[in-house]
Length: 620
Ligand code: ADP
Image (tube, rainbow, N blue to C red; front, side):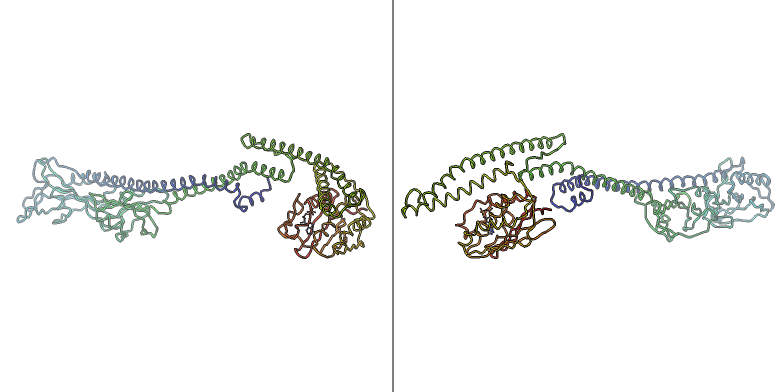
């Protein structure tokens, strides 16, 4: 694998590549379920959490309302006493003197034992209800308090007439009574009243008591839900009677202004998920609240749960979900990179193999080990390459043999034709000479083609031998070539100038070098239409001697420049219709120069001329 940096660059920036496509496809396929599952579970857990919150608040409200109800019921039940008196009256009144059917002492004992039964009863009293009835309104009963015991020892002796007190009136008519809450230094209190009956089930009196609601506070104060959910009890007017929020003394704070509380006070229970509201509590905190009114007592229970606490649970779930998603995403990314690499890498190997074959290199088979179809494809690819290699060898062999066999007869024809033309076989009549010239020219072209083909075939079969040696007088070799080609140049009025001042000894194969020079010079002359100038000179660059051949010819079109050294390539140009050639010269000399350790290149401006340059290693 390439370096990680290149690899990541490949993934993200070389668009349109199969690797990228696969990568994004795998990521998309894996991400879709991940995202939908995450959202779905977040959604369902939020929903079920909301439900849980509602259930917890409701349960607390129900449970605590039962406990408070039990507390009051228990107190009421201790007030349920009854006298074993067959009489209708408890108290007998004679001559303005009061005589008791029940001894005062016994009454006091009864009251004392009631007080001892429940520590929250602050005071009890007994009211005689038997005698004082309103004659005009028989239902209107007057009572006389006949005994009273209180915690602070204020046991009353003086009897007072108690008329129209609502708690007395209610109990005297047979109904248990629980008063409104009133606040004292000892805490919030209620008055409880209960009828006292005799054997005949007649109401003969009323037992009343003052009950301290700290008993309710005791029930409520133990309540907590979540980390900071709390519960409180308000009276009919919305004043706090008990609270798990404030453990100390209860102040009669009025909360009836809150929408939740005013609703509950009106008798509208706010329970279940619908009954839940988010609002700012009296203590300036965002809370989720629920409320319930106690039916038989004028008290309401309110549960409030700070949103920050409620949501912390869901936030924890969400954070875990995000963490989980990020880790999964990273795993998906990493595995997508590796999966796409695993799939694409062998394809890239095949691609590179195919590129090598295109360049004619059949020597390097591809190596793919995937133990699947792609590995089999690699094996088939290698067999195909071997087949091509054999095919090319056969072709080279064929071209070589054909060219080789053609050369002898073609050269022989040239010899005989020259002899005929020179008059060795007698004078040549003008008509025959006229036909002989094109035959000669065609034969010349055939000779060049056969020679070039032979040269290419030799090169491709690796039959060319190059023997480099130190050549001190490169200038002389070049001058010899110039001299050889001078008649051609003169014919076209092309001057050839050679500046050999910078020439240096080089490592080269002299005869091959001459081939190169013949080729370049004859091209310079061939591709200069009309008269012109050819210059040859040298310079030295980094241990190489560079030879330049500049002409003032037609130049090479830009689009043709990349293909110039290819086998059989010739520039298509109307003006070159009569210029013969094979397209093999440059291909051959490029191989020769490279085999001698040099390079060849050119710079050309169409219409201005071309400069071919080649380098050879300096000899020291
Ligand atoms: P050819 O036998 O056609 O000359 P070469 O391989 O020597 O084959 O050259 C290939 C082609 O390159 C030529 O056909 C010609 O179009 C172009 N060419 C080569 N040398 C020159 C030059 N000096 N000026 C312009 N074109 C050239």
